[in-house]
Length: 219
Image (cartoon, rainbow, N blue to C red):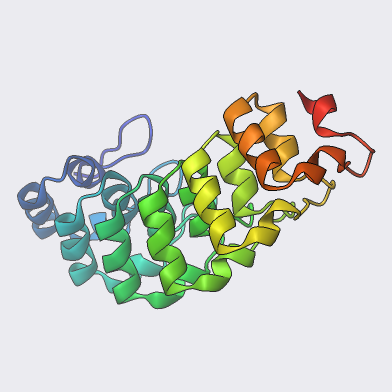
């Protein structure tokens, strides 16, 4: 029961990944300290259950060991970050009900849970997160990158539209290097997002970075 695979995952990690609650219960009955073990990325069994959207398993794990809610992986990622990233709204709701200050936590890049939802285009989760904590819209990561930058980076136009509807001045917000969301969309080749951003604010085309690069330089 102590053995791990090449990624450092225990049998309990694998049961949590697949949502096998009865197997998880049996494993923990045999070896309770499996609850404390992390894989090579520092992920707990709760991280894995949240990542895969297995709410019933997550509930049971936390009932056995409540401080799993506080644990972060090697990147300072919480279980809520992973639920948001993968679009598991019910798991996110349950996690926040247990520990509301998960909404405030950032990973070691300075990314919030809303950054992660925006990055992967998880609009329903993003909407719910902002309902709980509206000032998530204002938060930037360690490089000054906004949630709109994250949505633009991966071409998530619907999320970008919703974010700007909530906070129009996201269009103008710059990173530490002076990049706006349009610059990011152009750099990544997301034409539809770039067109939509410019339709909202044509003067974005004239904005330059700290080294005086325009969106055209990035395209």
